[in-house]
Length: 460
Image 1: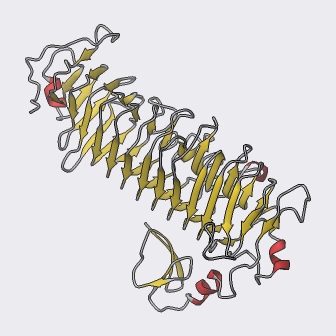
Image 2 (image 1 turned 90 degrees about the horizontal axis):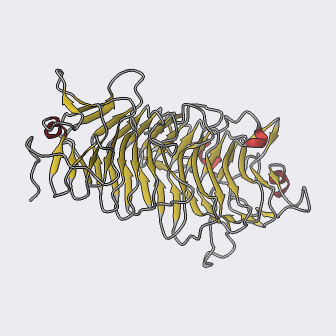
Image 3 (image 1 turned 60 degrees about the horizontal axis):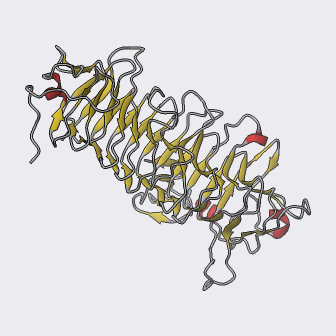
């Protein structure tokens, strides 16, 4: 059994560490900030208010554990970094807070770097402090944590960032609030396997950089699932909602799924860049339009793939208030927005995507195909009064407009009992909650936009 390391413990120095940096001895001990405060040279001191000040770097060696205890308040000094080569047991029963020691301090935060170390984060608020996860044979589980006001010193990849490839990571029920950079990210050469679900992303990338709030490289055999989240932008002109990329052209056999998210008030909603296979399903995207130049963005969904190797499947998405609905800037990716002719076919897709009030400079743009591939887009509801071929042509740019572009096959559209008609019918005060596909229920079934007693409401 691992024992708490007492105040009699001796400091050990790791190879290559600074001579004055405390390093645990790696013999399987469990350290707390209280026990560290009783060891000379750790840089951890107990303050009069009961908090712990971390004034110097220290390292938890492989095999050892650093534990946050219930109601701990940890204050980190400017530039301080805690390196975790062992495990992180940050699971207080109720709460713990990690923050800066003074206004203006920019700590480097926690670097969880052990190749065999794991991190459990639960009920912790990280304020002005980021977490970098860099182990290759380990996993992170964050549950009911808050990451807020990250200063950007720990990593340019976000408040919670990955700088090595690893799998089986889960981030759930967490809050990412007003971080300087994006909320979650990784590098261009280190894809990760991760599930991000039931989280709130609120006004991240406050320095208005060209980064989405969730910014992930996808490749290898890693699966990425982003589901049931609220991704609310601060109407910043550079920061987007969700971005998946494979800019290095890495091989990819894993699955990527973006579904059941509410995405609003960002520069754009969802973007994929490079060779990315992705299912984009049942997302609600509202007013992702805060790009100042329509030629540079503002799409509900943008699919950029000059390699022409992506496979994108989209079903049941609500896209409203963008400068563009869906854009394909270049290349010939395989895009299936709806293929209804053979319900038994492997690539059958009922469509059910809805486009409302997308456009710029007085022109409606539901789908802009600037690429060269044929796009199947049957079974959808377009931003026209009647779902006729002639009307729908007005909101789609494709081969009919420029022979060098790919064709969009959009007929048949959704039948006359469209989602828009169903929602209009739901304006009566019958007490039911209608989702954006017009399906009623007595209570909201998931997070997102509903029509209730004639009013549009957001359920979080």
